[in-house]
Length: 172
Length: 187
Image (tube, rainbow over all chains, first blue to last red; front, side, top):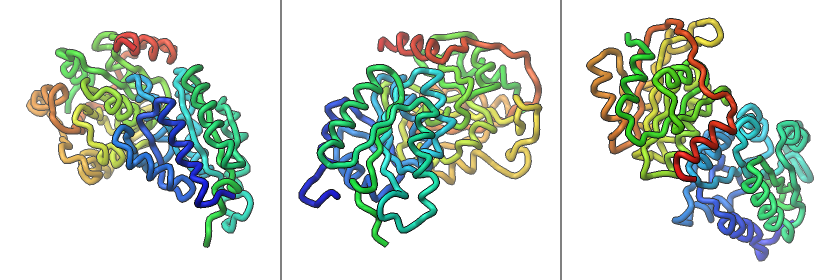
């Protein structure tokens, strides 16, 4: 479990900046709250609030077309909304970096989150998205940096899952 | 009612350095019919994504003008994008929806716009103030310079005939289309 003293999302944000991310798209999410706040506070980063996650997949393709790098922040439930749009990455070899906060794991109160949580990694792999998983605050930023380098270097899609143990269960 | 091929031809006749994203199906054939260009991103899939690809591109290249040409069916599938775009409001983005009130690629079944939905009103309601409803030549003449030079985000619903045209098929390989587009931008 992360603590207030360990600002690992700030290290993740630093990795995004180092990797040249200039557009951060997101659907509002408690697990990504700190990262969203950092993106919004940074004048060199465009923060783009979405109505549904698949918009962010298409946005990332457009950004790359224009020579910019986008990152999509979403919850595991949102991965389900992205599936057909991910064919853009396969058909057009567009890069995509997805940072996914996991619901439906340890400490989940709302069992409606469980089915998509269970399907998240397999569904991403079915759509040819590389999947890494961060369980500790120490490894999160390194995994993001590595996935970012691969996504934009190879022009393919990569996701880093932030486990519920890492982000903390939602308090009801 | 306008002829979609003539509309697209008019909008692209003096395109200058305009970058074009085409929604799958008829808009892709319409843009190809107006003349192939490396600065056209032809979509053959990813339904509902055209406007958002346009947004990502417009934000990435604020010095260039971006035109999204799509159809009513494709826009309906990704209608939330209009709210997302309204929040960003890039001045260099124009979205033109060729509205024939039908799903052309699947057999001309009636779409929502032929029945009750007004896409210009949707765009306005989402927060895009410059949302036009174009139905005739005079409207098209007003739209053409705005596509190239409006100083705010532009949305236009253009009413076109529900008619089948011969397919004009451009390059189909998505990676090749993308690579060619990026080369044309010097990337």
